[in-house]
Length: 191
Ligand code: HEM
Image 1 (cartoon, rainbow, N blue to C red):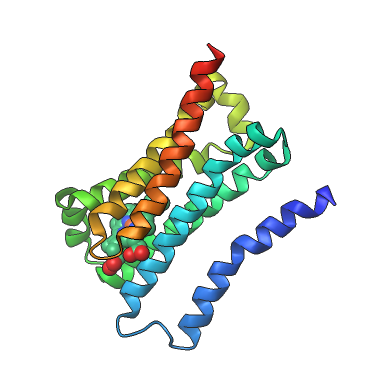
Image 2 (cartoon, protein in one colour):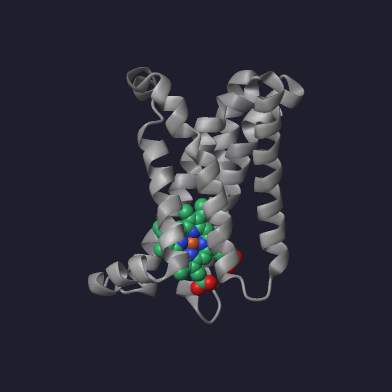
């Protein structure tokens, strides 16, 4: 049974991609397909990031190591959906106009913040294999604590964009706050 969990989590994590591709193939992305694609990939990136963030607290609360065994894969899925989101922005929203892309990355605060979150996810993804854990030693843990910063930046990015649907920000912001709060409380309690 335990052996089945990982492939099952992998298959479930691919479902949003399948759903997005299904909608693309069926021309079912509404009046502004590029914007819809950006929204869908962005929302799945933040969802996977939050689920990955939840793994350690869930292990601690339920004393179940199984949660942490899936943490790396879930984090990599957050990076995967964030990469799709970034590519949709580059290719479809900005039409690969590199000058404009550079300008927006610097001049629009919500884009700069999203990009900073992406760079963190990228750095964590690159350093996630076991060989990198060994190579980086103590610094690995320090670096990977940045995942909380990525979560906070992603929520700020979302907060900046949201016009009407405040519920989404409250939900994702609240979840990141609870997870971060739990980790801080746990750390303080241990000392
Ligand atoms: C690589 C840098 C990034 C860029 C350039 C970027 C750009 C954008 C843009 C332009 C939108 C607005 C789409 C629209 O409504 O037209 C957006 C929305 C969003 N982005 Fe990003 N983003 C980046 C990174 C991230 C990351 C790392 C995350 C999460 C981990 C994220 C999560 C979201 C979410 C949740 C939305 C809102 C979706 C919705 O409206 O429901 N973004 N992003």
